[in-house]
Image (cartoon, rainbow, N blue to C red; front, side, top):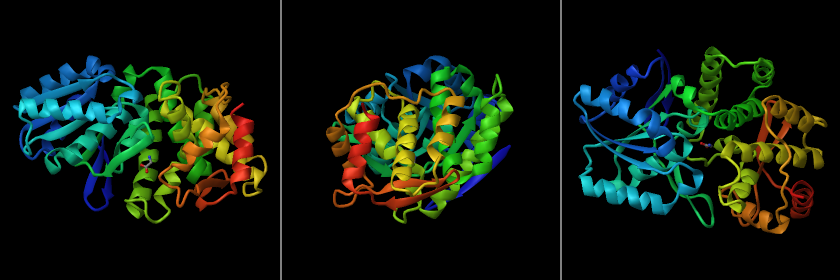
Length: 360
Ligand code: GLY
């Protein structure tokens, strides 16, 4: 079984499992007591919750579970408060380990719950979407959204382990698979031109094989782990690199109230925006945006936003980004494919003019 050991304030493994049956064995190994509280959503629970509960019961593990309606618009303090109320009502105490069984939304909210409930429970990430496997389940960021913006309230709280099993992808629809692919492309554009070329070849095949998925996920987790190890709490300008395209993406998700675009789809537009911005100020090599757009089209993305958003309002939301300092956005910009830099300031007028152009 392949494994990546992440060494941060607390060391933990990212384990790549072959079968669903391996899940209960590996969960068992990381529990402090034989008691778990599974948090999941309706999309995932309908396929997997019963079989996982059965496997755990066979191993004499006591299970409680809470399932909430799937969707980014559910990643709220309201949902968190309902999970807390339920957990109290069934007697979840500090002996329980929380299992985040689901995609990015489940991982973020279950992780946040684990970090604050009774001042902290242990938790395990079991990502079931490509996006969660390659990004959100690794690195300990937890959060919920509020009316003011995406991930405005959250914690850095590392899990006991991340258990990745590509078999979960079999029930993922093509829109959600592409959603995760946006984050995979992000790693390639950010750090590795060779990986970028490999992805191009993969996207041009009629079917992406299980082996391709395994390689893509392993490579992405490796990048994620390397970056998080260098800058766990995002204080050194290194972890920000993982947010390539995200300031724009988060504003797009906020302005559309999390209803129109999946996170990865918003990141696609965000990567194109910062690439255009970098070319506008002659920071990026000419033609970088075209190369980026071409791979996104190969991966099946629509690269036009096709909606009208007010550029001034959009800009104001971007300025509330967590990476902004004194109302100044710090951009992550590409120099060329495989090479990006963080903490770059661009004057407001240039940003606003480009926003007016791309948001029309
Ligand atoms: N998804 C970006 C990070 O974990 O830092």
